[in-house]
Length: 89
Image (cartoon, rainbow, N blue to C red):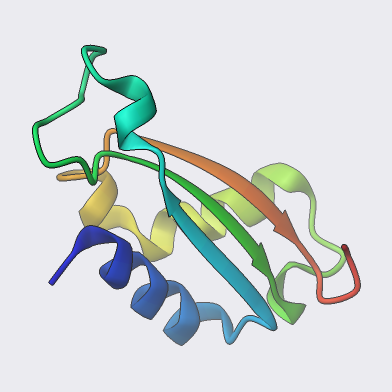
């Protein structure tokens, strides 16, 4: 299974998001630390879920990092996050 698909499935299971976008940005980092042939090393995730409503940025990031702990210890080199409650654009 692809890393992007695993990210989608784990975040969906953990947060039941109203919006979820997972973008593989690995090619933008070709030649940089952590980059591997075939990509799936650098990701940007945009997620909107009730679980993040009223939570601070750091707390919400920790929640996502916990859900993706296995991937962050392995195939994911970099993960940028855009998190918010369901009413955030």
